[in-house]
Amino acid sequence: MFVEDKILIGGDVYLLPKMANRHGLIAGATGTGKTITLKTLAESFSDMGVPVFLADMKGDISGLAKTGEMNENVAKRVEGIDSFKLKAYPVEFWDLFGQKGLPIRVTLSEMGPTLLSKILNLTEAQSGVLNIVFKVADEESLLIIDIKDLKSMINYVVEHKDVYEPMYGAIAAKSANTILRNLITMEDQGGNDFFGEPALDLNDFLRVDDSGYGVINILDAQKLSMSPEIYSSFLLWMLSSLYEQLPEVGDADKPKFVFFFDEAHLIFDDMGPEFLKKIEQITRLIRSKGVGLYFISQSPADIPDEVLGQLGNRIQHALRAYTPKDQKAVKVAAETFRANPEFDTAEVISNLGIGEALVSVLDEGGVPTVVEKVNIVAPQSYIGPIDDALRAELINLSELKDKYAQAVDNESAYEILANKINQNENIESEVLPAPETPPVPQEAPEEAPQTQEAEGPSLGGFDLGSILGGGQPAGRRTKKTAQQVAVERAASTAANTVAREVTKGIMRGLFGQMK
Image (cartoon, rainbow, N blue to C red; front, top):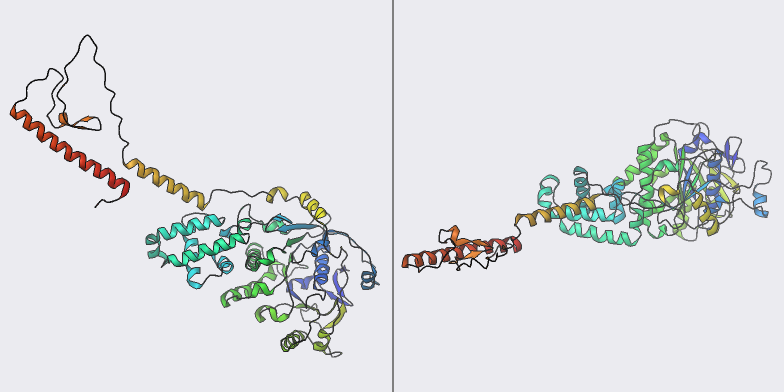
């Protein structure tokens, strides 16, 4: 809790606000008190006027929105703290699926091919094809907003690979088909809900309420945890987007924003070295943007050393050493602390009770303090989940509801490419003229009957006999000479030849080259 311009973690251990953006770690086995610690820190940052983002993996963090209740355990943990006051905090509920919070949507163009390759578990060759698809879309101003846009772009690039391969390299149809199949799997996991518009504006996470409290943004991740690729990629997208968008603030008196990564192991599982290097770089540099990162996991071993070395504030709950692997994890956790001569750190870690933790924070000079054993201060908000009725009421009252509640489908790659196909079909149909309707024969007046003229061969209403010079003006039929008969026969043969060639031309246009 926030006491005298400092964050009281427990006992006599305080986290200095100006050191809060030096990042941190909350570790411990399931059921040892990590959630309580997370809530206590989130409340403290909100009290300081710092907005927070965190994921609710089990549904029990939602109690931040409700005033806490005093009981024997809470009273014991806050004994002697005069500033402790039960209260609720300003909370904004979010949900990638739009069921337990405002829907969060991201466009595939914003996500980009690198993170999308991670979601889809693509090989290097398949990622190369995906990169080409995004490159073509960028060059031709075709926005890839949602999954149907990406499918259209993949098919378009493969169909025109003879145009793009000289510029970008090989475009394997097999790789494209694999990407399309993986997109179907992503749709089944809720990808159609996540990718679209209106896209999330990260500035809506950086809000302070009218009373000066930082808004606590809670992402409901109970369903999302079943799709770990989407969960981890969304958090990484948030991290990289914050780094790119926020201005430099230097060494501020307090963070501008605090970001909690729950179940951090999901982020780093199967992460390639190049990707890890980028995350390590962002972790190191983003503190100059005023952002504090706090990773939450069962063991420090879940965090790569490149990142773990940058987490200056450490809170370690109990770890149980039942197996050799567990014992190794305890040893690793103990070695991350500055030793306290009064106790054996590894032994204490194995025997901590619920709500107890070993804590080391950065002092004013940025040096880790000696590790201390403390009881974590109880949260001031409600311990446990809120009911669905209160959640629905808070969502309905949100000032962001009108902005994000309804999805929109603006013109993007899918619509533009569909229009191109329709235009091409119309152009092809215009190449062949529509057959003309034969003229309706006019009846001659009864008072002036005419004898039938000699008819030459015709096609489509045209008198081919006249065209070839074999026709006669209307009048009486006369006896044909041998020369006239020969001319008519020649005209008939020529007309039939022309008719056959015209018919072949029409069939070639409709069905392709005839043999």
